[in-house]
Length: 197
Image (tube, rainbow, N blue to C red):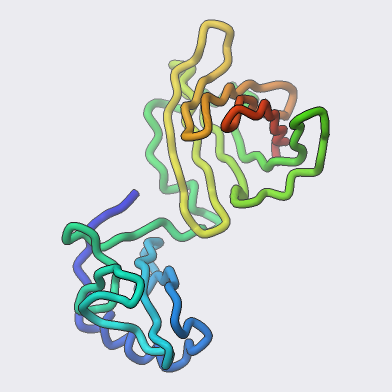
């Protein structure tokens, strides 16, 4: 999801003028899509509210001449969440248009340690499901901070899908207009339920 992009002097000028109006970012980082292409770079705003262009920020990160964070010479970018963000994602195969599980979902409940609670969504806004004609699950996850994560999972023999995360394996299964996301998150058994929009 990270791409290298050349920033023009026009964008640099935009940042210089925008930084004067965005003093609420003073002394902090902000992800900003400067040209409306759906990708935001990370910019450091100094204590006086201006973008630091070039050098090393007080917290040790490197920014280029336009103020964008770089690592190993690459501008760090992430997708910006829009209403049509999922439409630009390339999936692995042809959509199975007859599959009733395809569509957008949002989490509603979480069950863990014997309790069932409304799902607050900590950082996931919604999921876009696209099961293709080979029965692969093409999953797009939209996060509150604007990131869009995508993954393609092969179908298991029992019709479920297994996704490996840093907290443990997650089993994804489908019911009537419902998606279940279950696994051991760092040793704690948890089941999340999402409903189809």
